[in-house]
Image 1 (cartoon, rainbow, N blue to C red):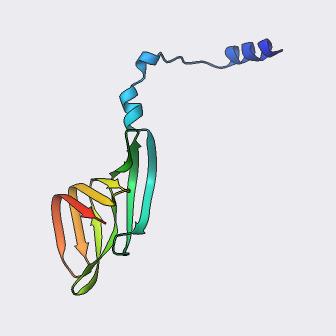
Image 2 (cartoon, rainbow, N blue to C red):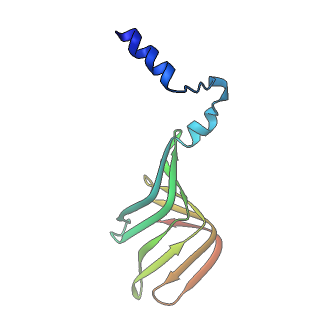
Image 3 (cartoon, rainbow, N blue to C red):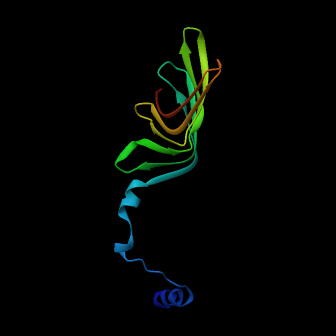
Length: 128
């Protein structure tokens, strides 16, 4: 009976075999965990809220504390001598180290602050 079920599935479905040498193991390791529409919410060291969104993100097997982000954006609140300021941030790419709470933004980095300040740069590191 089992042989009939196995044989029937072989004759009714096309099976594609991929030789193990054709698998790009580097790609498997470097894109171990993928996510789309990722959102990270938390508080910084001063207990101010932050929210980071990304179109997509991935984690690498050998770097589990870092999430590599595509088109990150979000809000960060920071303390100043004049009170709290809310920053709207965006970039082409980013890396979020959730263990150390460090956000590294690269490519077309934009920061628009609630106090009217604007920053445009190629790279920025934010310690949350």
